[in-house]
Length: 370
Image (tube, rainbow, N blue to C red):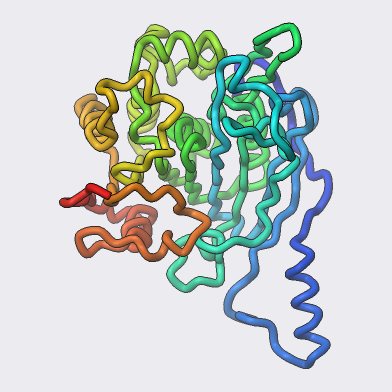
């Protein structure tokens, strides 16, 4: 298996199974009662296997990193890159709170278990465009938006393993090894998980050159391209710049290499990538950590979102976009996923067109205020 990270390595292996026990008990009760199972013969429940990579994969506190898999159609795969917050200083990176979660970020995976969910993870829902796909579910526990590769000493008492890129590329190695005949891979990023989504999309395309790769990044459209943030956080705190494959930073210095340029670099590297984003126009939580690096006091989030998209497309990269009104935040795990409709276009129908190569028009709210 080709290793796609420049430094650090961990290889994936199946370690142990974590099935959703409540679902199994419910199923047993139905059978004992002589009843058929809900959706039997027409749809499946989403059950997860936990996969533990060996080697240098770690969460922020040095604890075990893992991800989850649900295998269905081996030719069609959703790689879901979950959020989990970010940090870059002693106060925000401290291992406080319970079950591996602080107010700022998830620093280990104690409290993470996908189990069965609603929204996009309800594979019994007839409108779900991913109902027959295999799923790989990757959560962040390193505070670096899946980008880092450094052991960062913030104080004598606090060393943080910003190893998100090492963990993430181990997941990609697993995907390529176990789904070698994939013809469709949909890389979906949520909040901080969508920051690196275009980079991971480019890496997937490198590993599986015969597959059609779509990237759908949700709720990070307002992350700025600010030279100070790029140098002080992406590079100095997380060690991301030197970790990336050459194409991801080609032609860019450290101050130039900002989050919107991730889309530009991925699109220029592989013009066959289908790149798309979703944002609520005024989501107060989607970019709250990075507002100090935005223009304006307070910044107008929609102006930042629209400006970033314009800059990406000015570089010649097509970025499909769907901008919904208001200040909502939850999307993938909720019924909101099926309910969003803007200008007569439902989000799920727009996504269906995107993944079937119909190149949908951009959708943008007219009255975007909350």
